[in-house]
Image 1 (cartoon, rainbow, N blue to C red):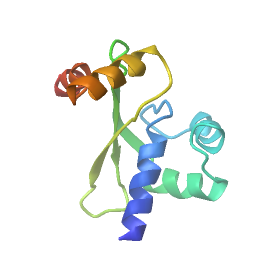
Image 2: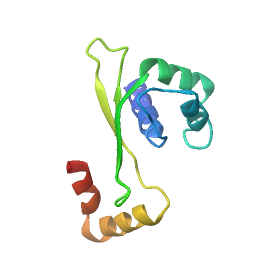
Image 3: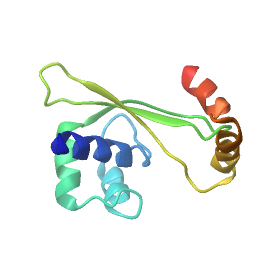
Image 4: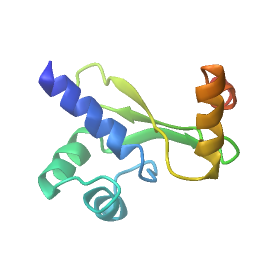
Length: 114
């Protein structure tokens, strides 16, 4: 179970980087630097297992963002959706306020549905 939690947390952290359809040197510098805090070994393992990003959707109005990764080491090609959490900035602060007062960030829920 701890291995699965580690893998899921790695995907979650990777979702904070801009992810084109394939993992490149640009993602290495982003994920190994301040965004992902990956070690070189973690990046190599991640890039070998998830060399393709199916899609990354970011709504510039609400701050919602999700990335779909495909596990190429799995015989079934499992897909994992990773959602970004709160980032510091006006978009997420507004959503966080609505979340705190209403119990849900409805604008981001609508973005996820769309």
